[in-house]
Length: 200
Image (cartoon, rainbow, N blue to C red):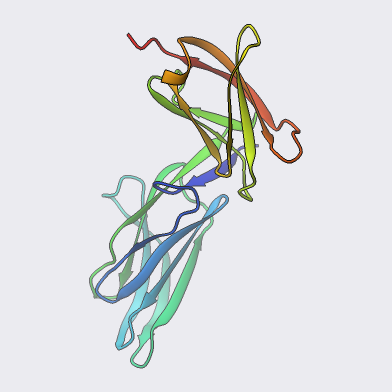
């Protein structure tokens, strides 16, 4: 079974905001394998239906949800949410189209699917920088240990995100093994290998 992980642009589980003419507080919140969209319709505005649109390239959007009826209120801001239960692997772009008003700005978020062994290395081989993604649904502190083929420990890191950054300059060209485990229990959850390419 493959388990998707959600990565927001610069930090895991960050909330990104954008504004439209009557759409306010538009944000994306990753929820494991799903994406929660939330937004407000600014007080003093109503519209006839709203569409939630998604794209994988930021250009060609498709409607994934139609909210029918009158939206918004003359008296107060009205909040709305939509849970995208089946986002695509990779980059997902979202925007809100409130009736005939201007659409919201576009927000984007990335999904990285972990392989059956519980991790995903991007890229592999690693040139200058790489990342090792793993399952960390509850943002618990995890550790990674990186070894050379001779068993020498080269690096140990901790993170509360769902990836470890690999800097090729900290290592040398060749093949490395790694093990990832929760810092609290030290029970290994995944292990694997990656290659550092020549820097010449």
